[in-house]
Every structure is written in structure tokens, then in C-alpha cells.
Image (cartoon, rainbow, N blue to C red; front, side, top):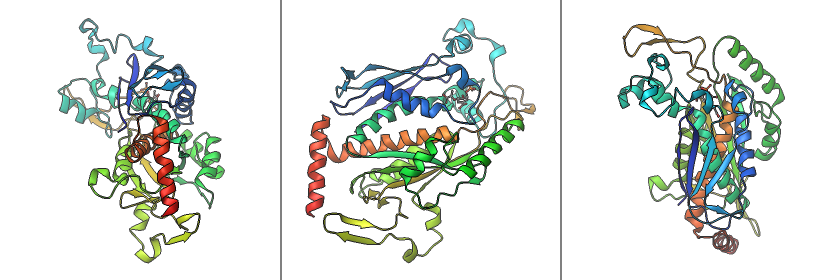
Length: 387
Ligand code: EPS
């Protein structure tokens, strides 16, 4: 089992993640993880904060020796480079408590109000610090290690943005890999240049209006063998595990698998992917409406997921709210944030998918070392060829 847990507040000293279950003998470098951190940070629509933070850098504290994993928990730390500016506000000392730092006007659409009521807090910062999407830097680091593991098995994870502020990309019939290559060159990670221009303009307009924008992105995973996940129990179904992982990303409100909601409109005879077989190639499909998953098990076609992110709740032109101390009607707090982080979220989506697929691979092929896991994988592929 691959499991992980993050810790850290958005403006605290650092973020941490402990990742357990990665087999021994996997080559891992801080540089490869930093590359993923950088991909998550830099996109059009992010706020001023990223200028202070510049490039996130990971420090591996345990679980790796001489460039290879040991099979022990991998601990990673990402320093918050603007911590110096937040020492008083985020101090752990009682002596630094001050009413002037208190935030009391919860933002509609944010965790602020539900959080203070649930945890008996009287300052929304006590909630928003952990609710912040800054936490996804730690998930991205864990996902980067999982991507490295998946590479050993020829599995790749791609993402691209398909919609921002209602502007939809036209994707044509390009493969996920080609769409990804185009997305990597786009400031909003959109493969369609015309749509990209509209998205950038919409983000600029939203910024000028003190508003925010949401959007939709695709995550595709190629190279998965038939048979990851299981139909036998609800919590083993890979469909549910992937949906939960993506839905857990901050501000996410929807996940589709394959053609998802689109499938619900059509007849069975129109949507199901017919089965073919060729000697040497095995079973295959000519369409992939199911998004690579049937009954919670991979069917050998690329896994295709879509995630919908709502517009962020931190508005410079705030909505109506209520002061949690005085109960007076007031405008919500103005908290510095991003205008549109959908492109960054797509990188987090890749990381979350990688964590789930790496776990499903470990479940299927087991092994304490990469060599043992690879041997089991090769044997299984041979069995499929003989089937
Ligand atoms: C975030 C708000 C912004 C973002 C932050 C997530 O930070 P601040 O409130 O300090 O302006 O910049 O994202 C990151 C720092 C990051 O690394 O992604 C939020 O409230 O979710």
C-alpha cells in the first residue's frame, strides 16, 4: 500500500509530506521533484505570492540514500520562503496573539465559516491556513516520486486545461500525449491557441474586476495494464479511488471518468466501447468512452479523467457576509489570492492520479523492491499475452 500524509500551514514555516510504500531501489532526485513543483507554480492567473516564493525547492529528509529509495518512509520538506514576513501572524507563541491579525468576515464559498464553527475558532485564519491550496505543493512532491515509480512500468501521466471562464478548447482528434505537449507550451496549459487567447483575456478581465475564474482540465494516464483496481468491493474500485483523489483537491467540485455525464444522455449501443482482438496485440477497443475503466478495473485503454474547479472564493470585490464576532452584515474579508489557478491545479491532478495508480500497481504487483515488482509485472504481461 502506498500512503502519505501532508502537514503544514500556508504561511507557516514549511510544508511536509511523509510518503510510505515506495519499493526500494527506485532512483529519485530532488531535481526531478523540483521540476514538478515548478510546473505547478508557474501559470498565468496566479497571484502575487508566487513572486516572493519564487521556486519551491524540496529537501528529502529520509527514505533515500545514494540516489535510491530504501523502502522506508520518504519524508520531504518544502520551505515557505516568505515565512520571514509571517513570523508574528503564524507564531506558535501565546505572547504573539494580537487582535489586529484576526480575520472575522468569512468568504462565501470558502471553508472559513464551516471551519470556525466546527473547530470552535474565532479567527478564520485558523481554518484558511490549512484549507489553502498551498498544501498541494506537498502532494505534488509525493506525486513526483510516484510518477518516477510509474515510469519504470511505462506508465505516463498527462494533463491539459480544456476550459477556463466558460471558454472551451477544441481538441480535435489529437492523442493525450500530443495535447499534453501543446499544453506544456501554453501559459494556461491549454492545447488550443485560440481558446488560450480567450482564457488569458478572461483572466485579465476577472483580475481587473476583482473577480475569480474556475475551469476544467483533463488528466490522462497511459500504459496501465488491464486489471488495476477491482470490482469486488466499493473501496477497491479504481473509479472511486481516482474520483476521491481528484475531488480532494482544493476548490474541486466535479470529476468525470471518460465521457461521464455525456454517457448518461446516450443509448448503450452508442456509448460502449466494442471489444476486438488481434494475435500479438490482445484485446483492444477502437473507442474509449469508458475512460479506460470498466467496473472499477482498468481495461488497458488510457485512463481519462476530467476535473472541474470552481472560481476561488477570495474576491477583491467581496460578497456579503457576517462578522462572526458581532454578527453584523459586512462584506467578506479581502484576502490576497489567485485569480485563476486552474492550470496549476491540473499539475496537482497529475500528482493525485499518480499517487492512486502507483498504489494500485503496488497492490497488483506487490514487492519490496523495484526489481521484485518489475519481475511480477513482466510475468503478468506474459500471462496476458498467453491468455
Ligand atoms: C492560496 C492563496 C494564495 C496562493 C496560494 C494558495 O496565497 P496567499 O494567500 O499567500 O496570497 O498563492 O498558493 C500558493 C502559495 C501555492 O504555492 O500554490 C489559497 O488560499 O489557497
